[in-house]
Image (cartoon, rainbow, N blue to C red):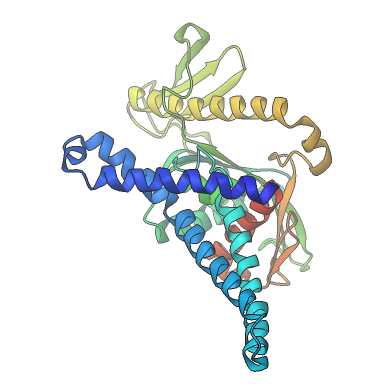
Length: 355
């Protein structure tokens, strides 16, 4: 019954896909570039699903044809049909699984760029040094996809580390790739200042916020308090003689965003508002999620950023993702931005979970 409903839905989607192809081939559609772009994107989104469904129908028909041969009086033909049926059924089962995954609704936020926030937690200066390491790792990963990383706010520590960094990562499907990076990242290694070679454990929090447009979040200007102050650099020394730094407080939620990297007060305010919109969007999403799947969250965990998600063990050159029990023994490559394997494994895991 379930599969019958799925195939009925797939038939509807295939008709929709064929209608989109017909419209795209119509010269009049091309005259309306906005409509053409929307149809082209929809066509791209459905293409793999429809190709897989059409392949499934071909293989299914091949299975029926071979089953008919089982009644053939020729023994050799029946034996050949039996051997092919086993192989075809395995292929069919794989295609059914592929169709299930492809029919999972995509996250509407997947296409968005993100605001990335990395903060030092427990571990003092060692945690701050690891913030810098993670920033470098994500920056190198972004370079591979041609994404743009722009620093929005950085608070340095005393010895080259970073207490907190906020940056925007813009490009194609950034949130889709990075959304599972939110959480507590734990590092185990011997600090450079440790004379006796003891391993220290530190923690860093990462937050990945889909970048919010003004249409995503409605902010009442009357609910904002904006303060300006003088920018300061590492160690607290003044780096700007004008009050260009901006602190924006969203009064109803208590969310505070500060930006001081730009010399222009207007640019700092624009950046602060960009971060504020993304944080409010995340809050809005979390509230909706709590209302929709409270029971499920109690069973499998909330998955929010307060939970430890990953450990980087330098003495063993091992990275462990605790959500999927994945161990990778190529930590040097991972810290150089080679995190595709982990990201793909997480994507597969959460797709399976959603099924």
